Length: 363
Image (cartoon, rainbow, N blue to C red; front, side, top):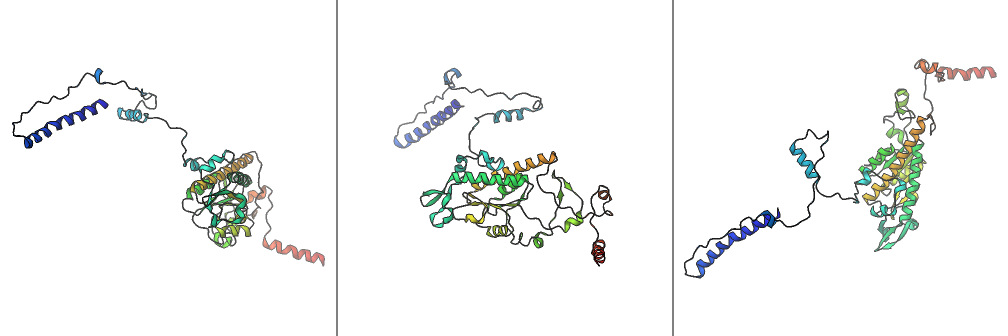
């Protein structure tokens, strides 16, 4: 290939020489011009033109039972894609979303690469974050990565224990670009997510706002039990047992409602945020999408570990949470439950007649 390109370049130059000399001779002298034959380079033997170079052997595509029916074009494509070198040890930020690390796998280098150490300008800092700040560089506060790693592991332990006890975990991240990280973390922890906007009053006035939402009953193995549908419609609106807020500065109303309802919260606290608004703060950079993805992935992985531990104990017949109070079951509606020995709730007439009988006995 290289020899062919050299031959083309030489031929172009040799073709241009007689034209140029012909034009110059026409305007510069009165002598008659003679056309001199131009000798074109003759292809030399391959043994003289070839230069010693490193020869790389291309492996032939392996013939197996899976690709025996392939045609020549497909085999050529497989052979073409096998060319090149395999680059290893490359940092890919997309892996933080697809395969987030565990809390025990988090290192200071990983936090540094995710830009969790960058804070805000010194003029915007909250003095209550002084214990999390390592120093100042060019007018910007630098967050201590030792503090970030320690608080992140503590928060991951809290998420794992709440998931192991069968609690409801809510992931909230309403900034632009946080949707994928929030949804992925909620899927791993089998929780719920909010990535658009928190509606004020969902906790303080949840029965009026969320009372119409669909509810279902599951057993210890997370299998849906389709009974008591009429009684379930009138059941109270559920509240989360843990709220993970990825941007506490914009969700002050959510954190305030969680405080009124005694719901513990976990939040990413930057140098301009108030760490007293959350129960378990994580000092880190909440403006970096890579940092938020890393922290949400670690917490989601912790929730996944807790759910696996809970299901493993449930298969052994052990419940890690308190059973829900039994709904109303009448013998006429569910005779099987009555034969099984479950106590049926007395009707309104029977309950009203019992106090009258007791009153007559007292007289």
